[in-house]
Length: 236
Ligand code: NAP
Image (cartoon, rainbow, N blue to C red):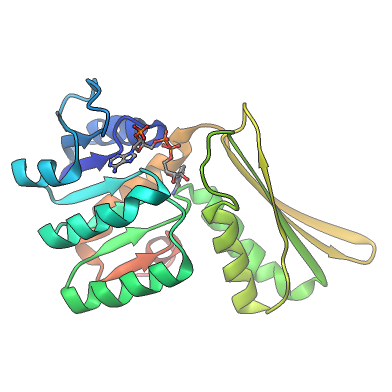
């Protein structure tokens, strides 16, 4: 599969370029960096996604950019009918629902996941299984200081999954500090006991198996799939 990476000059984009190049069945054909930096990715670089899709044949675009940029990237990929794997967080629930409807109408597809780390997906699953047994639940998410959105997409997704099982208030606390990557605790309380479900991404390599899995599953999905759990735990 021919893969282009949007945001190739960013922290996650650079890691995705490396992971794709290390995969014999995938071929990195381009990277997009708005600052037009010379990226050592072993593929052509472009100033914007439209230029890239005009110039090269792409089977899937992987997007790790910013909440402000991702909507336009989706419009561009829809226009060129190129599927996407999206890790960028910050799209609202209503935007996600709109994209799900549009994708089916316009025969486009994407996998959008707020967290590609397998352990984080399991954390969300276990938290949504445990929530019905506990009176009290809170989420604390910890991220590096440059993260643009708060609460994190993972925390919002965890809360949504928990509330689907057991409607109730679940406060989210966001910590931003240098030295952190991406960490989350779900704390569940009952009189006399606490259950804490914690996941730590200690480096960005932790997200790569999930990103590669999503790239490889793109040909099998239909429409917009939200959450890695749909390709991890179920047959599409
Ligand atoms: P980052 O280091 O700031 O990288 C973002 C990159 O996107 C920057 O190089 C930025 O360039 C570039 N960019 C901005 N606008 C663009 C556009 N219109 N077209 C192409 N590229 C554009 O951030 P990061 O830590 O890699 O995180 C990126 C996103 O992934 C965030 O939303 C973050 O929350 C999310 N994330 C998701 C997961 C997951 O598992 N789903 C894991 C980690 C992070 P400039 O610097 O020039 O603006």
